[in-house]
Length: 293
Image 1 (cartoon, rainbow, N blue to C red):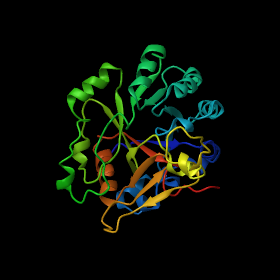
Image 2: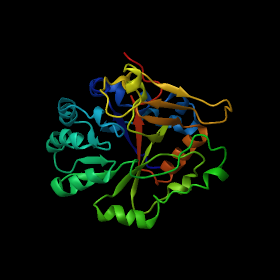
Image 3: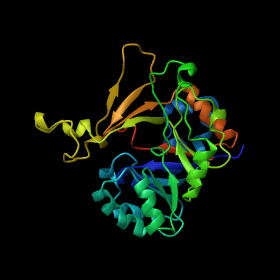
Image 4: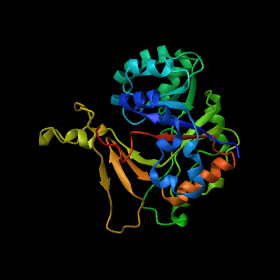
């Protein structure tokens, strides 16, 4: 087996600093969830080196990295860098321009909306666009009870027409989640390189940040456009139904996530072992266990 590449997805500047400054932090096992390291073959990854940083957040433009954090990542000789962009408003587009200007030629930019892809193609043809998982739409419902139910919601992201469409826009790699009840063979895509997100998949996102609304007057709560104190970096909301059969799920900011179970970890390992997924993305600070320092 050729080991996949490991990338660490960082939202906060504090976790970026820890990763860059602590040698032990460059091991995949330092960031993988504990349950993953108990899953047989997956535990073999604990000593694998992380070689890339995914800097930024794909779900909210208010979490775009500061230029100083980007500069620190670019200056480090050990790690490659991919800049992750969310869906952007006009104001967000303006904030992104200095970040794109600072990227040397050939660096990856993960785009999650067509407007950002158009910007790259027109104004930054020297940068390499990657299709983020918000562009690669899938039904990923943590309540689905069986493979039979999951098969009712097939995805077209692995089809040849979609691959050809992406390649027409200069995209040769896309990022995907591991949906509930998926088989490893479903990740066999011959045209586009695949990166898979480890441990957590997103269900849906919106414009409204629930946790960021709670300190507002009642009439102003739960609407888009309010101020932001980055409350999502400190608080997480766990969700559950009485049935108890669902995948564990939680919400950070404007996005709801589910947690991989044993079967999904086995799927990731099998797909990586077969060479169908050649990059695995570990999330270090945008998950259910992140708490204030």
